[in-house]
Length: 249
Length: 270
Image 1 (cartoon, helix red, strand yellow):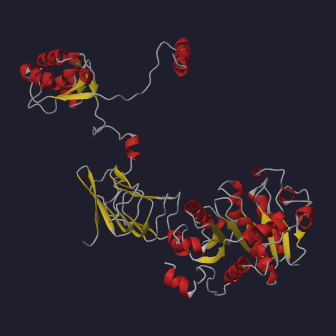
Image 2: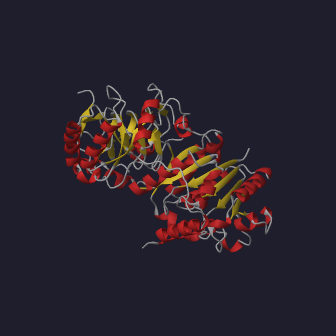
Image 3: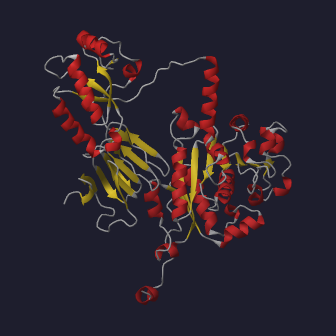
């Protein structure tokens, strides 16, 4: 048994001496089962088909029933039948997704909780969501780097292209979420599509890179292919394949 | 106006101290008032190269810690009367240097009317090297024509453009100069050594001097006479040229080509 676990247990024991219970706010992930029908047979077929693909993942998993996509509000009986087939598929229904006063009444009949959607309009917007950065416009101008990028230095263009008008030394790193253009000799490492943009490309004037990466797919150059050394080159992704070609041919 | 010049390289053993000694002698020979400071605390060498090791009473660390005055610690050169040496401490370590202390010494030297402060940086990129370059107006990056020295110099150039007072305050750039030492045109011709052009291309800087490889350097170091003062040496001429270029003169590069072969050697020597 490791020390942190012991410490946590001691702490819990201390807390138990003071209070019988502790009520804390915690967020947990919850699967939602969105019903398109209340026909138990159809639901069971569908669910057993899904769970067969990953039985352990769904085993005794708590699910929340979402009734919003049903043509009309079902009765408590119908829901009980649905809960029964959900259980037979290996999962446990623990509540209903919020859906107005009628769903709340239904939940009361069933003696089940109603789970409130984070996105529910009648709820104040949680602070975490308000603080989340708004998606930045796609038209940020490219980051210009006019000084040489020296060994040990890194330049990163977030959410945009990077243009380097000087050289990139061996041991230096230039990165962009978009494309990277280098108009001096490139001897260091270059990463385009740093956040997974597979359309990003690398263009350089004199190719001698140590490493080229696009959207995480990379290639190191222990020996530069002789036909590429020192000439203008572009690199792009074709599926999982990182490709290189001389520019202007 | 006092100008602070750091002589640095990243890699050790490339000739920083030899260069610091020769450049400061060269500047002093042209009538400039020069202080040359050894920043290599714990491994002091500059006093040996300058031939004043027996005259070191107080050192740079003593001044920084207020144990003596700057005047007491400055050692006046016996050959050139406008040249002063501030030795490093051999018994302390680099932690004895403080940014505030270094600034104070520089301010005092400025008030004393020095034209140039030449800082002999230790190897590496640790505190000593950082403080040696921090206040610099100019940097002479000493590089040998081989890959590891060039790589380290590139790293140092990166630090000069980001970790100096000028860079941090947005007060213009540190002016960077490249000085190649231990250059052997013969080995360049056979492809064993990188050429001036190769180094210039990789580092993207112009060269302020090319100093040929020579036995005169070791002899001068052992004798405690900066090699620039040996007037019969190509090394001395190369450093003189570098000093001239630092002062803004235009001097063509010398000692970068192999001595011309004779007619027969050219015809039959391959």
